[in-house]
Image (cartoon, rainbow, N blue to C red; front, side, top):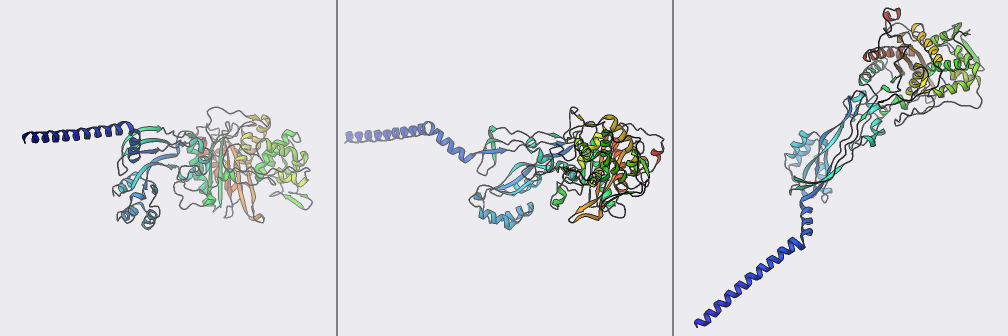
Length: 570
């Protein structure tokens, strides 16, 4: 009996030991399977549950003026998003969340139900970080935040037409933001992160692809002149209850655009009340007939063709000229005028008689050589080229009207480019909205002595002609007035005009060219010499002082005359 009990005890011990060994072997086999055979599979399964690949947003390049002043910057903000599959659409905390973010509570709950199987929907994009922190403090399951960037425009409406704006995804929509979108856009990166079950990042694991920030863009604009031009243009549009206006300033020696403003404008930081009509950069997209401002270009063509000399005198009696059923008129009978007098008095009759001596082709060729009727090459979206007539046979009335700025269409930038050629001695430089680090290569299109003769005529316009209100004070200027009928649905509008002034200063050694155009001024004054010339005076005077251009007038009679001196008609 004792032997039987001992044998049974031995068997039990052996059985327990065998079972223990089998368990240990099974565990060891399982460990080998988990750590060796199934290691890759299990690691992938773990990563699926805890490791995520997150996007690293790229910083869009900054846009600045020529002195580094910011015109467009990207600032970090937060975006609130939701994972509907983790949320209860009836969670009561959704009410304070919607109220805090200024969104519809009903709409948010409806979207959560509609996209219940999805893992991502936007709740509120690009909000202030402080507001995002308050939203996350509600601790709502399935609500997350991520960093993005928002475009901000420090100058608001002042530079809006040149800079443009982006959409919410920071893709350029207008202006230089659109033209240089690829240059400014960054390239997003990605990284692998470890997250907890709530989706909070615990640890950055590895960088998959580094983000590349966009490149900065330095414009040719001088923000000081841009503010100055915007202020004066807005003031004149309001004072004359005008429909709108445009002002362009060019650097004479480089072709760089120093200022370009329009009225009306818009604030790219707040587009809730945006009028689409105000999006156009009218200086480049809107066409008009230049009127009398084109006469100096025609005069340069006549001088180059040799049909007149500076001493030539033209009889403009009796103040009108008939071409069949067409009659060309001056504001009065100016009698016999030399070339300087024709420009100063803005005589259509005198200009028409000079044009008749050379025909239409030399005039058209001169217009082409200074940049009219063709793209400026500035690369701005929506640029309008304009129309420069080229009939196979010129009728006398077509030659006459072309000579004083009718029958063709241009934009304000093209007119400024033409005056730049007169100002710098006959060299046409390519225009640019991008700051230049080196002087550009220009092409001579007018002999230098001819441009000097024309500038002397432009000086007479301001000293004793239709542009007296353009007098600057301590700088001698030269320019030309223009007043043209606006074109409506049924042709020329009898009672609506565009007042234009194009000029340069200092006239003997010009530094800046400026074109001012005001659409449909009201209140009795509508001539270029009355409406646009005073804007030129104020803008150019202040601009030359800002650029430290040495005054060339001290105690002369011109310097002592008031800016409000009554000018002639032009």
